[in-house]
Length: 258
Image (cartoon, rainbow, N blue to C red; front, side):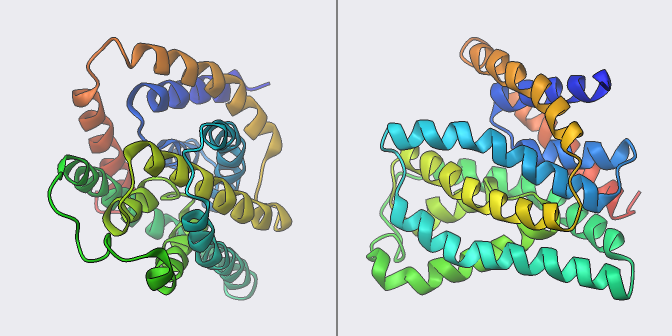
């Protein structure tokens, strides 16, 4: 047992429960910084993420806060996108090498963009005005758009393990007219499908350390519970800002800007 990994899981889980900030954006760079190669960090995070998303998705299904058709249209695009990204990286590494460097650069760019996405998300949540042209359209009229967005964002998740929650949440808020609880439920359910599929590909290529997944979960589950309880008692706005800055700095470090 490496209790350092359990403490990392506790830390990440606590911050996720407290602030709602995506765990992958915190966990994957931490694993890389403590010595995991990028491919193993991404694969391990995807499997860890799949297990944690399972509980949330089940709860939202019970609460009937999942728009299944939207989630499935996203998945039709996102799962092939994530699989294509993971398989492409494997073949690049097999025949040319350097896949880990590609992952680091892609991860760094996404980590720099994620805080900006969070800011956009806050503005979209506050926007109570008229619906945009996409929100008034029926799902059948924008199914190709939904699948295409899923494919593009799925590639990002397959490369980096990051974005299954935050990036798709922004798409849900901008392109669909949904209540807040349905955005969350649909996002989590779709994320479960996406990270599970991407995680299975990484399992196939040997890019998952299951003992590490287990030790992270030992810490993260109580961490999420503790953070969730405290989230109703203390203001978390400034903590979210601080975490967003840390995520951005991690991304800058990974792409060697500093």
